[in-house]
Image (tube, rainbow, N blue to C red):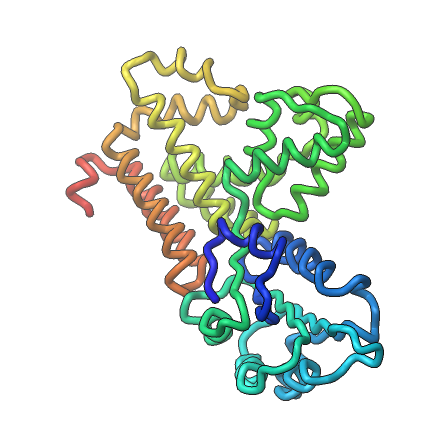
Length: 343
C-alpha cells in the first residue's frame, strides 16, 4: 500500500485490519523514529518486552536473509501478538524482505525504519505492492505542520506563543522532528512552564547554528561566491542538514529577493520583514537586489523547486543534486542577459 505524506498520521492512528508490515522511510530520521515508536505502542503494551518484541538490524538481514520471515512466523509464549522491529535498513537487505513477503502469514507485525528510498527501491516497491503492508514517507515538516507542532507542543506545557515567535521558530527548526521537539522542550523549561513566548524569548533560548549555515549558503549563492558556497555546503553536510532543507532555505532567500524587486524602495521593504532580519542578511539582500531582477529570481525559484523534486524522486544522490542546483544559481547571479536565454 502506497500513502502520501499527508495521510500518514491519520493512517498510523488507526492502522487498517490486515496491514501487518509498515515501512517508515524518508530524510527526517527523527520523524521516522517518532512514528515507529507510536506504531509500536499501538501494537504491544510494552515495546521493550523481550517475549513479544524482536529487534533486528540491517546486518542481521544481510547475514541471515531468512531471519525476518522466521521471526514473523514465530509464536509468542503468552499467545499475544508479536512485533518485529527492523532498524537501519539499507542496500543488501532486499533478499530478506522478498522472503518475508513470499511467506506472509499470521498476525505478527513488522515495523521497518529506513532513510531515503527512491521510487525505484526494491524494498519500497515490496511494501507498496502488497495490501498487507504500507510504505509511509517521512519528510521534513512544512510551514503548516511545523507551525502546528510548535503551537501544540508548547500548549501542552501551558505556554502560549506569539506570531512573531512562531515565525522565528519556523526559520530555525523543522529539519528533524526529534531535534525540533527537544528544542521546544528546552524552550518550555526556559519559560518556566507559564506565560507567552515572544520573539526575544525564542531567540534567547533556541540556538540558530543551522540557520547561520543555511543563511551562509543562500548569501554565497546569491552573491555568486563559489568558494564561500563550497565551504558553506561542506559545513552543512558536516552538521547533518538535509539537502531538501538547504534548497528550501534557498527558496526563502529568493522569496525575499522577489519582494525587494517590487517598486517599493528596498530599504522600506527590508524594515517590514518579520522576524527582523539579521544585519548580515539585510546587507546581502541590499547588495544582491542589483544582481537579481524579477525574471532571474523567477528562474532561480523554478530551479530550486526542480532540484527539490529531483532529490525526492529521481533516486540520484540528493547531496549532489542540491549542490548542482546551488552552483547553477551562483552562476546565474553573474548573467548579463535574461535567464530565458540560458534555459
